[in-house]
Amino acid sequence: DIQMTQSPSSLAASVGDRVTITCRASQDIRFDLNWYQQKPGQAPKRLLYATFTLHSGVPSRFSGSGSGTEFTLTISSLQPDDFATYYCLQHNSNPPTFGQGTKLEMK
Amino acid sequence: QVQLQELGPGLVKSSETLSLLCSVSGGPIVAYYWNWIRQTPGGGLEWIGNTYHSGSSTHDGGTTNYNSSLKGRVSISLDTSKKQFSLSLDSVTTADTAVYYCARSLSYGFDYWGQGARVTVSS
Image 1 (tube, each protein chain N blue to C red):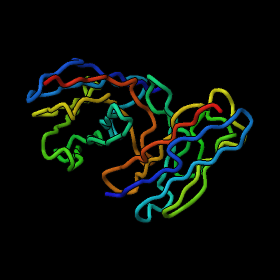
Image 2 (image 1 turned 90 degrees about the vertical axis):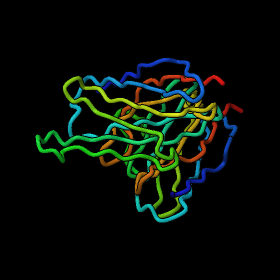
Image 3 (image 1 turned 120 degrees about the horizontal axis):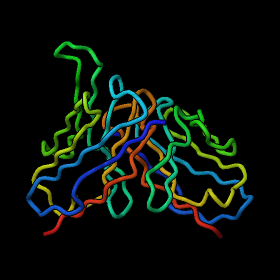
Image 4 (image 1 turned 180 degrees about the vertical axis):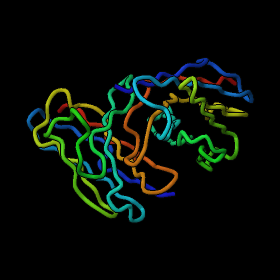
């Protein structure tokens, strides 16, 4: 199975900050990487797919980059609604596997 | 807008079978993969398996895939006429306590998810 390692596991930031979360894959997954946002009591929601592409309705302050084994989610200017837990997912090969999550908290 | 809804008991006894149903509305059920994913109390997400039917009337129009970590305890089936798919997990233990999600996928991972069904396995 492909292992996905996210960093940091938690992060404290303020409204307006630029935030970056990293996900590393244990082997080459090309661009087959998604990012999800999850709030307490809710299902994960897809933010980006295929590394770069925003899911419908997702604000443009979210962006993704990377390829192969290293990927980044960037929030350009943090908004109050963005405090949540973020997960990466590789769907290059079965089984699809998730990172362990990054909890984004208010400083 | 595609919507998924999980249904099933919230409490299962150890060694028994966990059964969940997912109903799909707002979009077609054929030609997509339909997945079960679970999230442990610690927050980790694990893909359980999926099922797919092309809509073809031939006997090989469907396929099912499972995570080998579940060691043959899992079965997923699809009823295209009812727009539902199901999960059956045998011989459960307390380690199977989780929130179980159903989700849709095709080429780009999971796009639509149900709201989740919390299942507790009692010892």
